Length: 97
Image 1 (cartoon, one colour):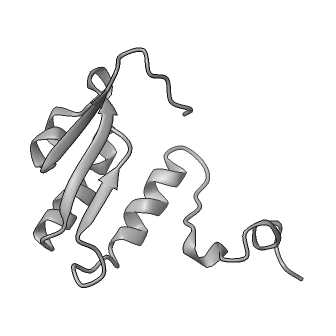
Image 2 (image 1 turned 60 degrees about the vertical axis):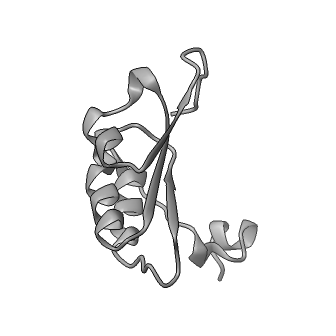
């Protein structure tokens, strides 16, 4: 029997899921260990959370460009320093958590 996810998203193996505190973040960082510069030339991180510093560092070491999209007030200084490009959103731009 197909799972609920598979019935709504037939290509569910292309998606990453996580649960619990930082579950989605952990799942994304874990999946990123399999990134290759042969497959990707750029990674866009839609978060300013310091949790993604390790991912950004990993991508840079592979020669993959890193772009971070975040509100300035939510942007980790370390993540901003590692990113090749930072796109700042307006302070009043609210994102779902």
